Image (cartoon, rainbow, N blue to C red; front, top):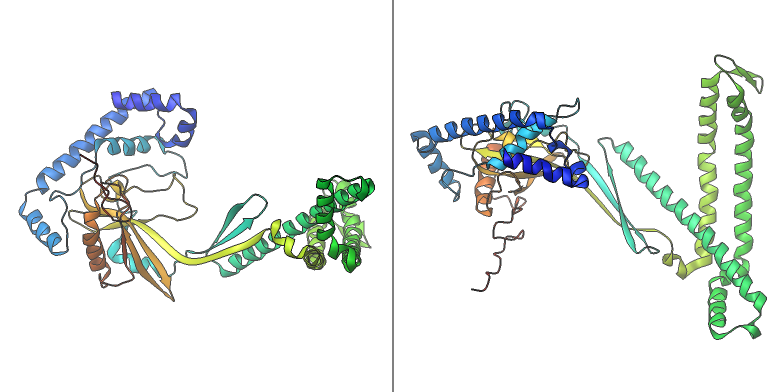
Length: 431
């Protein structure tokens, strides 16, 4: 009880932590119920493990585990009381409609690893990550595009590219306006009256504006006039409908260009007209952008956003727990878009009991097939040592009916137990 009270006091004393760890926040009237449930879970787990460990069935299981490369503790890795407490708290706090309480009692909501191939048949977890560099801030920005429909991803990519182009158009407009303003201000002073710094700045401004002053000004003004003409046509087409939407009331109709329109009809026409002019306006803006690129030439990359990398993959990840007996249960854990409200815990997969390996498995789509490409020991609840990885790979491959020696399967240590995450022993401290 005292540990629970101390933990709640810690949250109360740290509002930011409390907001972050909302799923662990209890009211005092819940304390007794939480403690009682923790004690009951400990009792049930203890009874199960006491009956299992040392039994003839378990001895046979240990032999098979050894054959598959298991070299961890014979009794497996137990769940500590602190994590049982954390799970029970979330059993009491996650009561919302879109939330899933933590529970050791029902594993039917998880997937049996031996049946996973059927589950994967129509899955699509493809994503694209586009990295953009901003030379002004010196920072990189990532945009991740996900979805199970190719046309949606293509539309998002097109939207990203359009946004990048329009941002650069805005930057170029602002840069040219500032350069012209600074240039004209120094020109008024006169070169004879400039100090050395001003002369140097003036020369640099002339260099940057050289293309603008040698013919490109006319091209820019022509392109801007063409854009203004299209935008004027768009405003004139939208005008009557915008005026009507402001004045129309209730079920009344407005007569526009000889036709009657209700409010919904007017809104539809406004959207249709905007869409009709979308491409022509964008085309004119991109023409202006090309002129700006000619104006600034080598200086363009000093201020313009640019795409520097594009990564594409189709990957799906599951958490897994290998129990002493029974099926290996897994649960998908989204790389992107998951929430704490829906995440399962390894302890739920194993019903709070000891495990012989736990972590994550990753599949990568190659052609029309999902291929196991990673097995790791990333379980914060059980924290199994790196030693379990070869066994985990062999056992999982056995359940999936695949070759454990497939070079595409990588084992990765994700738990810091005297071994770093790259699988190399840490330097021993000096005696």
